[in-house]
Picture 1: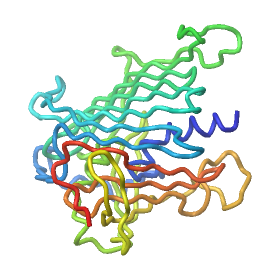
Picture 2: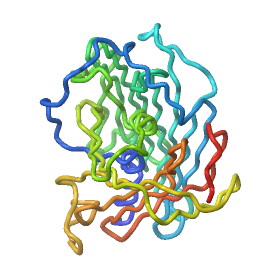
Picture 3: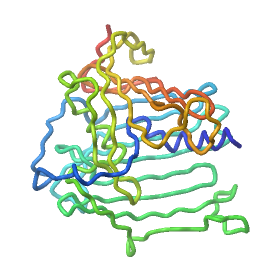
Picture 4: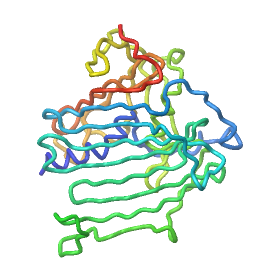
Length: 321
């Protein structure tokens, strides 16, 4: 039961861990929009493109789960933002091997603005053992507002909604006629997926080690700042082995800020998943693609590692040493 609980929590946190973010209390003092409309920002990014595909394996006791990230080849225009072109990105996380006994099959989908690289819509379909949540959040940058609709419930072994005794969750929802509104404090607010792509637009070659990157973002019906520390370029390259290419790759290292979210090393407190003051480190390729290569996380029952397993249609060839 303990293994299941932590495995389920690990997959739930997969996207936030993977994108190098940590949730902390939001501080309104720095969130001053410097541009009047989202149309004023054009990042002219050169790190990713439509059609990109990346797959990762998550290792704990063997290969326990996998994550796939794909950028749709099509161009999208959303009904609530008819003047903005969007890219659709799907992140799929699922348990594998022995961990499939406790099924996790999650989809996180982001529609991000092609030019300003911020969230326009975020969709989640979560299937975690008996738990289900289907959620959509539409973002209106110029109004500094987001609108969420969702349905959340539990099911029985036949995938039917469970109203039986002992089902404490029941069904909770916010319908199209009765949505939940989220007040935003920045024009360029991110979701957990679009925020990762925004990080790939930054110029790390000219960034000083120790610099803190802060990104305004929403998750469900709350507004946060996500922070990660840039630790600089590693002296030793990381070795990757994939069907699409293998070799050594130079990497930048990052450490998410985890204030209040970790327990001390050796602690038996099960209420905290993470262990140590800096439980998560991740590395991205120090080339034009800036794709994550590895994530290492100290958790309650040991260490979890995420490894790059395959990639296709990157904007640039990977720079192998």
